[in-house]
Image 1 (cartoon, rainbow, N blue to C red):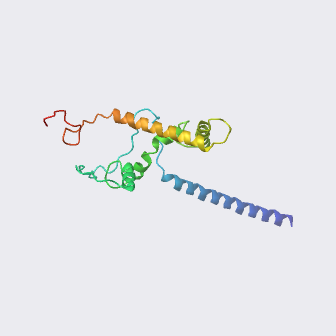
Image 2 (cartoon, rainbow, N blue to C red):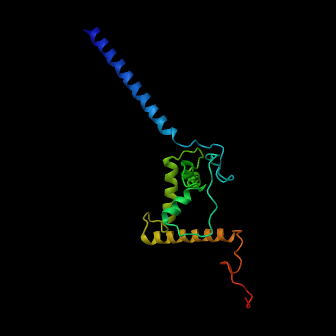
Length: 186
């Protein structure tokens, strides 16, 4: 009977080992399928070292037409769509969609491995909490949040003003929506 028990245990062990190996194989294949759709990491690029180069689309694709002089008011949905549609071809590719978040991701990825760990995200979140909690009591009050939000809006407006001041756009000529003519005789 001992030989039968040993043989039975051996068969059960072999079946269990095959089941575990099969489950591991399917899990590994499932992970590979999930990771195929993600963009490849760019290990050569470091944040702050020049522009971020993203792959271009179809070289034979026809670009957008010239903008017309008449501008219509865009809805919020149109503005949001146009923010992502970088090449203005009327479609948004995966690269275009992800390109707007590259800089934000690189700020969070402190070890530059192109992977965002929970610890990296948690450190930034904890730093922001400490920044908002000005009295250091471990609780964010409505007043502290209002002060933080007002400061963020002030900084956003300052950045917009700085961008507008550095714009090298030429002003429109008088009579075309530009500054008024200084000549009183017209």
